Length: 348
Image (cartoon, rainbow, N blue to C red; front, side, top):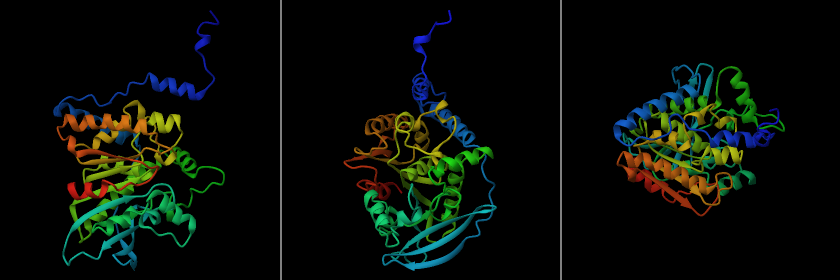
């Protein structure tokens, strides 16, 4: 009959996508119950993630150049340029604690910034501007500086589309991340893939530094920095310890329901194979700390709690539950640090 099923129809794209999610059965969701099953699952999901991320750049020589050295009191701040791929360079700050002894190799962190002013935020550079000061204070954003003062060598790059690399992302009245994502798709590229690639190149560079113990490199990031930390750590075993702040959640909650994401954080087809906790589970058995603010308006806490409970299952199957922890703090979208400093001291 012509009217059959009419009552189940909808004109709402939101309701349509919500219905698709409800019946979704991710093909590679974590269901392992032994280390042997985990190995097979991990191999399959990692390969699928690499495939979904699309085309990757070709490696080239790093050709690092140090263009600036500034004495910041407790550490020296170098500005470094490295070559990521032919035709693309990465500007970054490297913070060298003054406690370093000649010939000493110490722990290093790759500090990933989120949306905002790029690498300046995480090293606490505010240019004397009140809005930048507010941003750093509101998000406790200068965690790169905080770790440098605790004796870590820190590298803080600008991701593509942020800081000094914002050229080409500025579209008045539109989200530049979304516009560049669409432009990149026309060429078979993904901005997130390119930024993960840049993160891998930063780790390549850290391994060449005489001050760095290449076997003790960690990564930390808030918000989009959490996105970067989760996926980079999932794909690169050289990240020995990770802290993901203000990000672990469900794609259903923060993305489909809240719309709290952008083109720089999007991987087409991702939910067909797993939810966020599955991809975070690729980091196991390496130590992973999650930071979640109970008043984070972009990443609802109930979804963060559920995501963490699912992530924890991976570590429990591997019999290393102590390597996965959460800092659920009474605050909003910010870096907590309440457990993070001790976490790196313990595991890195």
